[in-house]
Amino acid sequence: MSQSEPDDADRATSVGLLVIGDEILSGKRQDKHLPRVIELLAARGMELTWARFLGDDEAAIADAIRVAGDAGDVLLSCGGIGATPDDRTRQAAARAFQVPIERHAEAEARIVARYAERAYPNRVLMADFPRGAGLIPNPVNDVAGFYVENCNFVPGFPEMAWPMLEWVLDHRYGDRHRASPPVEYRLRVVGSSGEGDLLPLMEETLARFPQIKLSSLPSRGQAGSPAQIEFGFKGSSTVAAGAYRYFEAALRGLPGVAVEPLSAP
Image (cartoon, rainbow, N blue to C red; front, side, top):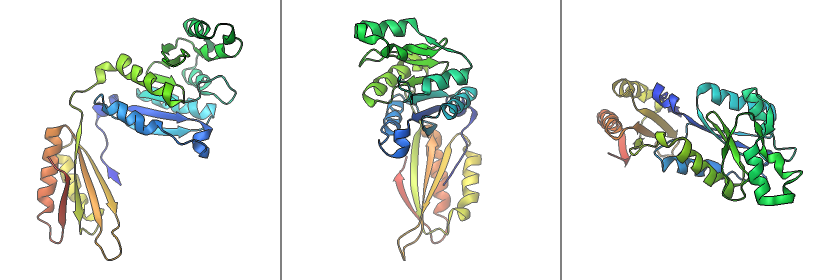
């Protein structure tokens, strides 16, 4: 698979996802966050740039947060903000931002209002956040998530995490919603020798349309059938359509190559 590099504007608004928990990596639980986050972003004209799955390792989580923060990415993190010993995301965030963990008064008040005497001594531990953190409201049980700069942390439970992430996207990043998100036009090439034969055409297309993302996905055909490559041209509708048409016209001039439109402009 090959793909062009995002331009500077794409990098400035990159959105990353961390899914945290040993249970995901061990297979005890199946991740549901990745497809849902893609849906939530798409509904707002946004895109997911990258995703990582990590176990409950404080140092590894802190490193991932630090990298995202240094890059200026919007980070959405699911999991590990509970109070049990294996929940290390709150501590990792404090470590990444080099601040202490301390009790957040408003978060504590919400827990106490919900659970009264049952808030102590354990539930209130979930109000211990990195110094300076803001709160992400939890509509299910009032145990808040938190954010530090552009890094946003919610629980691993989907019924809590997803509405909390919607709040993050709508209240913290409403200015990044796009009414006209990028589109992708796709076609399939059947009968070419391989990606290498079409590399010059890919490079020419990117030179003419530098705003697009061009992707290629080769697949081996069944025994006796020709190889296939699926190409995608992603960007604004006008530019992506222009790149698609340029690429398609060049392909139709090649001998022994069949072109199958998959999503044409």
